Image (tube, rainbow, N blue to C red):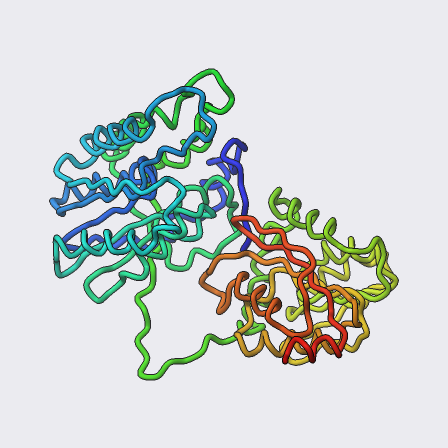
Length: 456
């Protein structure tokens, strides 16, 4: 999963979410707890993502603590307003919590906005201390979702997940996913619904309005336009809230290594989705694909191997620049759709195949490995890279592009995949493009003699 977004974009309309997801099918969030703690990466996350939960807990008499991790001062980079946003946003939180849960305690940790990753150890210590200060038999710890495509949200979500114990349940609330995501992009495994009463919904709407620094322009300058525009705000005016349960860590008597995702997972995924991962329509996917193609080192190639071709969108572009293309995918349905899409290019050879069990015979002068490597275990990834090295001609190019962050179905990460390639003696990095969401890198196949020197 690979996402980058701009908060100024219109985003996915709320009407689309309401029409295309069966919300009633989601199980209800379990609130049979003795204490609630809500973590917010920024002042307003707690109101947008969990304001209804806070009000519901207050109505039920559940003791509640709110922890605001950063000061929120970087919400408007380059602001010309001269306003003290850290102080202003702290006051907004206090007013919002008065509307939602007047009895809740609130702590402001004051870490730099955008800097949770750099201070992650201190953040974890602070959150752990907050939990320990109010022990209870059943605690619900709620944080921003680690898959929200925002770095602070990701890291804080990972901190919360690491604190999951028998006494502490963990759930996460999406914020920006409603903006950049689309129905069908994710399977709602572990998703939970919290219905809100009319009174709770009204209290949340009032609390949201308290965050004026995020809803209204700070000044007439473009740098000071609202962070949460009207369309984005609609996602938080629902009569329910949505949370994702973070599974309890599995305790095993002996450690086991993550396994490669079985091909049957992809067969089922393609059966359920006509536009998997929004490859055809997502502005992010279109941009990323353009960057990958622009990064290719030559205007034309002789023989190209694409591993994990999916429905053939990139395959068609590669075919325009190659004398021959071998495109593989583990899913038969993906290959069927790719053949339909690329039927005008006779030089494309589609094959159903699992790269962990063998690489098609070369030689190739270009290998494309995009959004597939993190589905392999570390040992299988090593075998695939060895196979690519054997079939890629000396001086040939391996292009790798992957989502950087962990997600449920993947035993590896994009960063892990790219690190493994960089450490392989057959490859030397010649291009690196790193964004918060994804990495795009090109590697040159070293001659055999140079590989021996690298090993030594």
